Image 1 (cartoon, rainbow, N blue to C red):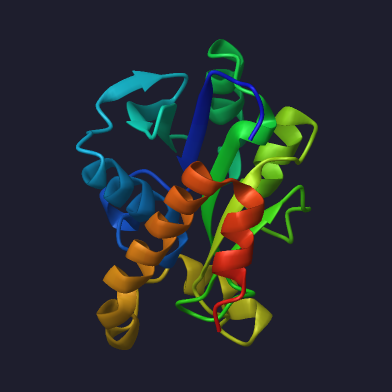
Image 2: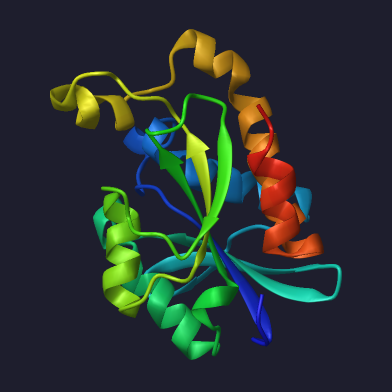
Length: 193
């Protein structure tokens, strides 16, 4: 975390009821849970994003859900961060990740998009990639042709049972970054089997 006055946490997803309980929207679900943990509601609107301000330990935060579709997540985040003078290293993005098994969480920083359209859009919008990412595992369907149906599909009954725990773990990962810095948070979260 650098010297920006604020930290911006952005959960990725697609707006609209039909997407609300899909794997691709895990970022939205985590941001909603974080907001509720911090006693906030995402009731402010600017630059095609819904957001709330909050505080953790003496850090001022923005909790953000870009309201453009997933593959256009970058511009709303970039505009908000430019407006509030937030460095890219002070942005934490929470998103679904098919390369991790369901329930796994991994924190990374400064990595490429790995084929994720939301992350690709963010890297394109900023022209850089040093944001911190909380990758939330949603598992892989196996065949490439099934990928879209998988991420836009609803959680299976088994996954639904573990969903609250997964969201709580992702919230904990975000709080660990805010409270202890990204390196300590990575050491703690990424070593979990």
